[in-house]
Image (cartoon, rainbow, N blue to C red; front, top):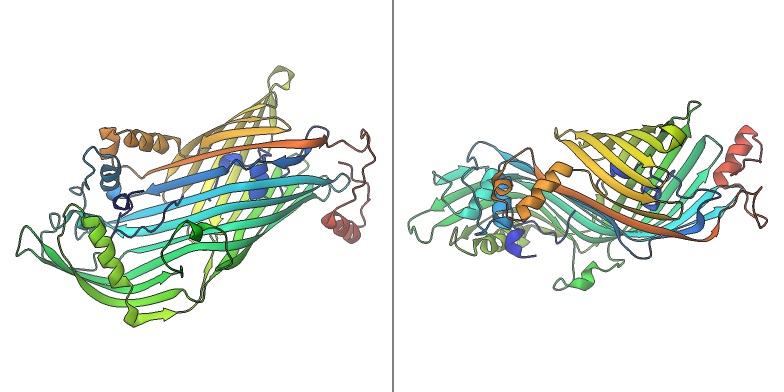
Length: 490
């Protein structure tokens, strides 16, 4: 991507692709993706599914992003406008207006799972995925500076560029285990090795700027910033090899889940997802900057590049640099859900399965609630309508179309249908959508495909071979604790 199109504030959005967001619509679908994201969820159906599930290296991914505030039009006019200019006339100077930015991606390159034990009802899986998480808070003035001095009536300002930003990307290689302990309880976990790719974070707690308009054809600014900047170590100039898995920045994470089926067939499921850390190289840098610099040619044709380089130089103050390892947390989540299925129509041709979900980030204030409505026709075609609301006061409607048999699954969808459509229209140079400033501008899209192969998982009473499996670890432990029968069935 062109650097100019990434420089939203101070030209410092360092990510090349940022987009694990909650994919609520996949809850209780029984897909391979669902079973890796929600570890107690099964992905095999005895007497119907084949023994192995694999995505055959076709990426299953989920990407979403949003930007709030007055800068929506500034961002879209630069990216999608016919003249590719920063529109800044609607930005408010000196009013303390900020814009929230958030983007996530979760892409599975490899998903493989096998049904390993008949009597134990055990599923074991392996996966490799790449995730990136980005969030930031940027002032209107930070965007306005991209257009030079035209939006600044005064010559001196204080604390109008007090922004913050955090981005990390990493590979995740995982082992998963799921077991049905008895007819009501299932447990699962996913343990992961994390391999860090990149980490960037800055927090500006004081800023000041003085504009010099002596030469109207070449205005300049003396910009001073105080704060802290973190950056992981990358040897030499960045190239594609730096994005390949390596052991330079190791970490670990765990997800675990429990599901319980009540007497009235309500399934309650709880999950802790991606609770982990990354230990970045001991050659990573922390800059406690209190520095200033002169920026010339404000508002010139290639000013975004100039601003990017100058601000980065101010923040990378080698006089206040500490080289030491960094340890950061992953974006862990706690989720609780409840679902029940209802048969509709003559001959049970339709099944309606509503799921109520509450999701809370463990290390951020983010909270989301969702109602997911699955409408399944003859066990093959599923249409999903999802509504969600979060603590940013965003109400979203999403849709999903899925074709799923016991051995094949394909799905496509979005959990922000309206805003994704509007962003797509803006990308197609629709001026009305480019100029619109709503609650937020952004989009969400996900896609997945997997197949199952091998012999059919047969119930022991119907099996053409003698099953050699036994109860799994949790089933044996449960039996010892509560002296239950060893005959569980599949």
